[in-house]
Image (cartoon, rainbow, N blue to C red; front, side, top):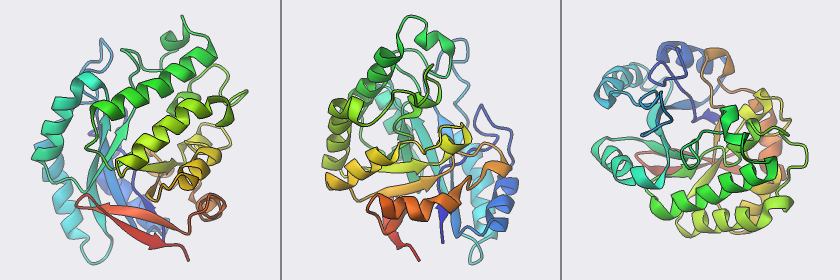
Length: 268
């Protein structure tokens, strides 16, 4: 009964996957539905400034007929993953209000002009400073822009930090993480469980279970599921872990967005 609502195709600068191949993989793995969420990251790092910008008209022209062809057989929603930065808030708003997205993920990839994916981010920062700055930038992003549905891979930084999960915990950064979660909840926003953390060898999703539990304990109710797949073989990556993880974190349901409205789907 699970949905994978975070995946990328050839419209994203870091994927070559065909949408039809992603659908085939999802269907064969027994999912109940999917949502495409290709990257829009305005003002990305030089020299790849436009790496994560694509023609939205072309996107819908390819995705809508596919979704229609599977109507009644396999639900396919169309979303977007926005790279949030305060100075691109107006561009993001123009995009989101101009197209009929089902689902909008707000994510932090860029931190004050750098993506932690690249080693340069930690060149002049120690591990702790770099991780904390990442979380602090999320607060800046939420305060600057809020027309999204969930925040994606909340501790994305851990995938690329020099120490990975060593020495990392919710408790160590609870002051800044709590501020993030309270802001999201106050604005009616959710978070996702992103299973790419398992793919990256972290032994945990993004964010970690303790953050998901804290979101719930603070009153958060909106939780979505995504593998962040960029290839067909990574669709629904380690989704077999999700039912137990959801229940461990206090959820007996997950959410799927259609026309920007959440449906709460109870776990079997």
